Image 1 (cartoon, protein in one colour):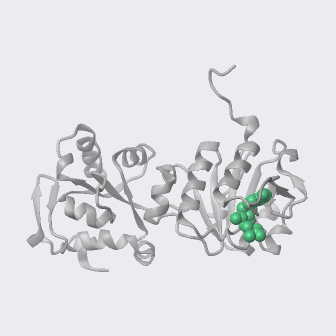
Image 2 (spheres, protein in one colour):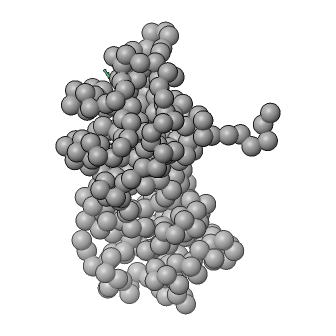
Image 3 (cartoon, protein in one colour):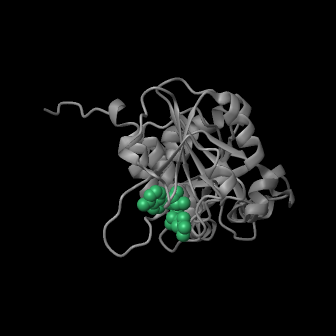
Length: 290
Ligand code: SAM
């Protein structure tokens, strides 16, 4: 890690205006460090991640997340919402950077970047702290590999009112830029747990949950399962190989979604959505509907 995150030695490439630093050079160490958050190694070392978009950043702050670095492009200067989030960032000890469009493009790796981005600390929930009440549902994902799938699942879990997502085994990083983008902000709302197979199975023994695992060879129609009596963990298999035997055999129910047509299986994120909305059907109501 360079000195950038330690906030040193950037005088030549930045200018302070009040509590905002203007940064225009791609060679600025802080820019280099924030750009390096596109790499998993840097995200792990720093325990941080980058999220883009004003709405998403405001949502995060409202949910109690603190911003380490707020970046906005020159064109956003003076916009009331940007000013508000900048003031809040400074008040909570974060740093505000006004950057050129070139710098924003480079950090977000986009030709037409958002006008606002921010660096946050990652948050993980410990599996041992997860206790489910009766009406709660969690999703457990076995070795999910595709960032788009994981982001869509986190977003869908949020929309279905699920309480969190467990990542079992070697999963793609929920704090990668691609996954964070695909969550559309739900990464800030849905607790995440990282665990291994053995720890998960040990937790399951005492957690008092119904483990509903999905499998292409599942014997039970997913619509015939009782999701009301106990809190539920809906478990989904890896995109290529499905659920391994050691996880499938620990399930209380092995559910299948009936299919027509030629496709062998459903996309993982779609199958998760179908399962979650069925598991929570009795809890989700449409306000104002007949
Ligand atoms: N070739 C893999 C297999 O044999 O399981 C396909 C995996 S599928 C793309 C990814 C995951 O989505 C599965 O492990 C399962 O959890 C879920 N899934 C997809 N279609 C399903 C269905 N019709 N019924 C139950 N689960 C399904």
